[in-house]
Each structure stands twice: as C-alpha cells, then as structure tokens.
Length: 197
Image (cartoon, rainbow, N blue to C red; front, side):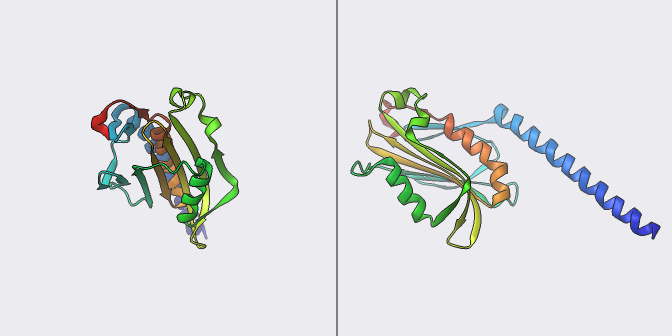
C-alpha cells in the first residue's frame, strides 16, 4: 500500500514539474517573439511573425505557416484576392467565407469584431481599409472541434482583399493564437509601393 502512495505522489510530482516547465517555455517564447520576430511582406501588407513559424506554402496570393519544431495541430493562412466584391458588405463577405470553411461557432465563447471596432487605425479612419474579425471555438464540418481566428481585410484604395486564418485544435489555438493575433493587429499597410502588388 505504501508503494502505491509513493507511485501516486511521484506521478503527481512529475505532472506538476511538467506544468512548471511548460509555463517557463511559454513565457520564454513570448519574449523570444518580441526579440526575434521576422518581417514578412505580402503585397501591400507587412507582418511581424514568430521566428519558429515555418513556411509550408508560398505563392503570389497564398502563404501558409506551421510550427515545424512541434507536432501542434495548427496552421496560419493568408489568402490574397485581386478583386473586391463591393456589391456585398464586408460582414456578408466574411460570413460567406466562414460558411465555406464549414464552421459553426460557439456563440458563448466567440468574439466578433466589426469594422467600427478597428476605427483607431488611421487607414480605417481614412476609408482605405475595412476589417472584421471572429475568434473562438467552433465545430468544423459538423464533427471536428477547433479554434479559429479569422480576419477579413478590404483594401478600398487598391480594390482587393486579404483573408487571414489561424486554424488549430482547441488547445493549440491557445498556444499560437496570441502570436497570430499580434501579427494581424500590428500589420502595416503601404498604399503606395507598387512593387508589393
């Protein structure tokens, strides 16, 4: 009986040490992101991305990243389109894109930001950019539980769109999600540099 208690306490101690180690790694990773973020430019947008993200696909209009140093079930995608459907609102366009992904969000754990929520950005104030965002847990294709953070950006000056997503399992979204959010909220926009189009 004493051996059973020692084994149980040993397992509990090992689990607590693992949690402490994980916390230290996550805290160091946040500082590492600030210290070693890389710039990445897609068309007129420039992003700061974590150094540990690895490119898995890169074309003129699509970029995908995954963590290649872990087995996290996570992927970030930037999809650029050279047209803007001005016949429908950005909200309707965004809703259609989310439906195309076959996502049904948990309303109690989702955060939706409308264009008015981004009015502090100078590009939005001047009418050049329009943004919407949804973030939260969802069910994909009726069965798969996941975490999605998605942005749709309309560039009214250049008449094009950028659809950005971070899709992962529920737990992995909490790991990479904050870096994706930081990347998107701190993006810079250059309306003049023709070499980026």
